[in-house]
Image (cartoon, rainbow, N blue to C red; front, side, top):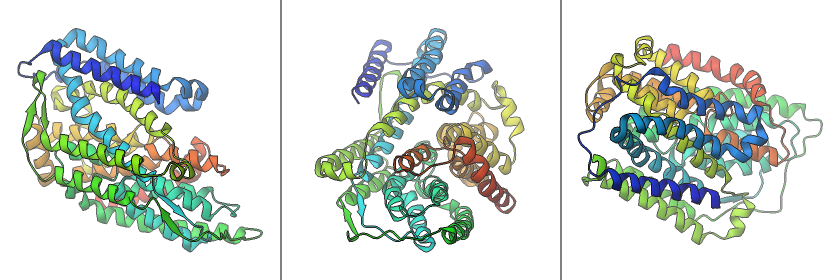
Length: 474
């Protein structure tokens, strides 16, 4: 935790120094048409590091992932600043203040508050009980986030099935539904949609995903119930988990803090309080500042008002959110050239992508495929900007996003659905996936390997369902 504080303090000091040293910026110029394709190498490098190093070099990655993130960030930032000077400083400061910091604050607040809620009591691990818990978690995910819902529901689910012999599949479908697909309906649900919200997508616009999500959830719940019933009948001795401990929600007052988070995000998408202009010409909306301050306050209040014993019993640690904060610092820095090239449309070095990705189903599978192996938040941003570049080249982003929501809604639906849904295809597709896997293994549940997860589950159950969705909706 101390290392994280030092890193964040260093970033803050560097940002303040840069803003003060360079002073007021001239009118920001677009450089997307000038950037070479190879300027995206650091972005590819950090994403491939996240995908492969935990598998190939687990010990090194565990101890040095922060250094890997910093390495790729510096590989991009140093030559970028040397060549483009003030414009490069503007780009880095802009993505840090507009995208990265609000993104991490939302994740941190949901992670912190949900970690203070513990559902006590055990239920019989029957297929019907498991089905109900998955459904509840799926519905909760859109409103308290996939991270919040997963952390809140995974331990009660594990306790309920502690006497079951076959239970890895239960956690796999939990990852499918609660840690990914369930977060489709609001910007609170999954990081990609929150980034879209930060870039102008209306808060309630994502509710348009409900029919698509509904078909997918009903199908997967049906498959799960049949599969879990099959394994339940195979149990040699079905010994249902029982406990003298009655059902109770400990730390229930944290639900008020969750409501505070939801309200702050919702209100920030409705009101307009103007903007502050910082050095370099960066405009910070006052409503965004108030939202982020409120989220931090909700998290602090949760920490101060919740007994340490509750978090300890929940197995709450700062490790997962610490790793996300450090890795995403590198991701958001290195993604800058790719975003600028995509914003340049056919005039940029990545114009070939815009030329190849044309129809909604192209966007669905392109965004989804990258979300499966990389990370769905930057993937969403990439294809979000691809669509803006394809249809509204040169148009101010705010106007382009409004046009995208109204005249090209199917494309935005495809990008959103692909990024959120297909993050479930692998352990690395979305941040909660590995967190659920880790908690399950800590509780003695043998989870499939990286490729076992893919070949035994996602390729068998998810990919066919995505093909069906393609023909129905895209």
